[in-house]
Length: 528
Image (cartoon, rainbow, N blue to C red; front, side, top):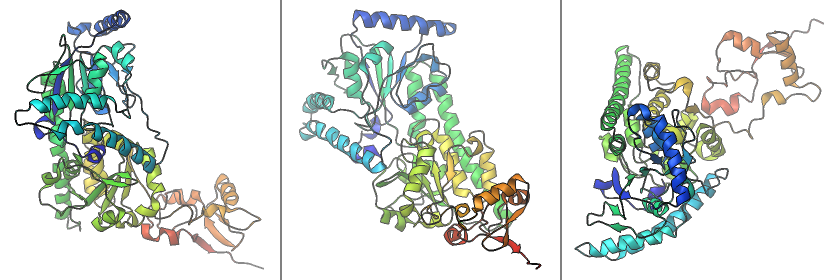
């Protein structure tokens, strides 16, 4: 999403990895601290017969990759956003970054801050593209000037240089896809050296100083295949090539397995003459204020889930690969309504499930107009863990996409994808969100009633006594208690006053009307 704000891209041949070599100078105190860390790390890795690489991961996705490659004990530094994996060496890793963003604020405020930083970063790159010659000499000089300009732009995620020196990495994993959303290669180079004395080779893919001992890898995957290829790139840099090959092949094989599983389950449904709709049309929103559609690897994930991806502003394409790698873009809510997706996933970049549920409910006035929301096919997902990170967890995100898309539509499919080894457990990572019944429009039914006796109190007393119903003081009707509903075992779809099943069988477009009225068992007969 942020990359689309900047409007800048690397050429296709550099999107997987750009490798630099660099060596930082160290003070005596830093060198001593680093030596102590080396001793701790080498004792941890002694069984391998070598210390191995010292890895600084400046992206949550690369931390996931390093962990999946079995290299957690080699991690010496991670970001403030990374989940620290098990198996790290004692006292490691160091936290190398912080954030200048206030994530407690609204999405509109965050978007404005990001756009401001992106504009500054884009302006600082202007010298590198304003003048160029056919022999590339001027471009090389301008690239150096651009690095100097970039140093003056304050990243939203600045590097803690002292922590980086303490970590003393031999491999640094970062990105250049966006100049503000994570540390750039230019920032890493300056943090490592503390100077701007590095020079570029004629091929512009190597940076040299006095000695060359720190590899800086810039990973820039755009599609699922690109993501899989980065597994090999990281593995090669860390000396475990075969692990990377295995990890890449298993990732791509499991994506195919997911697609085949969905197709097979759909075929079984058709064989039973059960009416099944065409492939669900799925839209992923990776931001709500303003709305952004999903790009890069997202269309490939939806295709692997056996669904059709809705790319706003584009005509439907018979080829799922046609949108792979395309950037996320800002759209309008009218664009979203015109696209009319069958299923909508709210998986905002950098936000977990809880935050995305909150923000989806906060955007009820916008989302409630969607046909998908009216039919109960709006879901919030853990966008940070399963959709935004170009790493191994995207496989789980593809599985979540399938579960959401076919939820309530085809039980054969949902049961089949849930049985796969890479299915998140117990609906972890996603949740259905009801935005049709705004809280302000429908008060809690238990808080309504006469002033003398509160329904909630009567219901609580009846449940404590194990009673199946109680008498409503205002109407003299008998009302089912939660005890009765739980004995029944499922929602009846009538909008009962004390339904413990979240009214899951009440049509989404009727909830606002149905749940206003309690369902009564029978009218009390006055024997007098």
